[in-house]
Length: 139
Ligand code: CMP
Image (tube, rainbow, N blue to C red; front, side, top):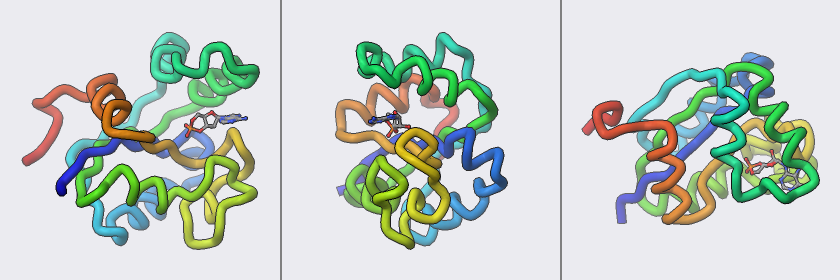
């Protein structure tokens, strides 16, 4: 069944010049890009996006990281897109991510992990709506 998921190419990957390679991996996996833009998140935007983590010890550093430079946010579509993109990203901790996954190729550690993808259908809906409106989506 066709499904949407939300993706971020994070500031570490953009700064390292890996945006193109990561987008190519996404396309090669058969996922379709429905919407995309480059943004530099404000502190408020990052805090709101990651609000679910606000009690976690890494929250402050995460917000600092996500506002450290531009990132590329996108909406991906495909069969089982949420699961498919999570498999393509690999585990959160880049040092545990196998070669051939985005984090295995371009991530550094548990925080600087190159990309984000929604973890379920409800989150995907919320995350897509956080950065995109319907007019920004093709098809
Ligand atoms: P992401 O998939 O975007 O979800 C939350 C982010 O918090 C995660 O990727 C990492 O960038 C960051 N993070 C930093 N430390 C941790 C941690 N200990 N556990 C999970 N996420 C972490």
